[in-house]
Amino acid sequence: MKTFTITGYSTALFSTWYFIDELGILFDAGDGVTSTLLQKSRKIQHVFLSHADRDHITGLLQLNQLNARDGLPVICYPRDGQSYPALEAFTKKFDPHIATTVWMPVAPGDEIWIKNDMLVVPLRNEHVDAAPDTVRSLSYKVMQTKRKLRPELAGLSEDEIKIISREKGKESTTMEVRTNILSYSGDTPVANPETWQDAEILIHEATFLGGEEMVAPNSDKHRHSRLEEVIEMVSATRVQQLILGHFSSRYSAEEIDQRLRQLCDRYALNIPVFRLLPGQTVRDILHSQPINH
Image (cartoon, rainbow, N blue to C red; front, side, top):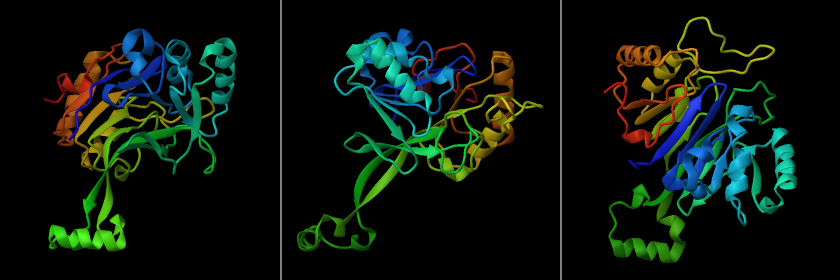
């Protein structure tokens, strides 16, 4: 399992962003991302935006103004969100020197390659109420690719495999295998556990602790997750590490931690569980103390 240096801030309504140092990627870009990362923000090459709520995108202005250079950063956003072209036009007019920043609309089925062996795939989520063919809110998976010997050739010698490869091509002897090394839910209601099956690291929102809070949308609300639903869902997967954020600021740190420990016990969730408490930036999240260990 890969280890990453992940720094983040995530408080519902105020700001959310996660920076994965080794990959040079940023998930969402809420307020404070650049002032927290300082010169490290220069390492960001790809920004993956989940949706257009202001607490997820307003940090783009400063990030872009300070760090834009030829072809970078690449800002990936849900294909049908109308806020992004408007924001692109405004920023290019406001700061003409950032005209070479790449703004890329993306949708499920796309593949955004960030390294020779790594790509990011967008997934539709149901945070925003939209028609099935309209993409306004996304989750993302980071996949690592490797080529492995086809199982049916396992008993052959190296020389025999080379002969087959020369005669029929590399595809006849090897196959691509993709590993989900990191997933980011964005804001979303809880999905089918299969969505995150085998993720080495899952970053998931947990806005509400429980009770009577609205999760389904009404005239002025989008869908979010309740903590218990998230823990129950993850307990049915082979996720290896869980990072929880986007807690509502209505809850104290003590309430969140107590509820988290109760639920980890109830669902026998023994993997490391990390959390970003409201108002707190956490650096190198995966090397902090898991709440359930």
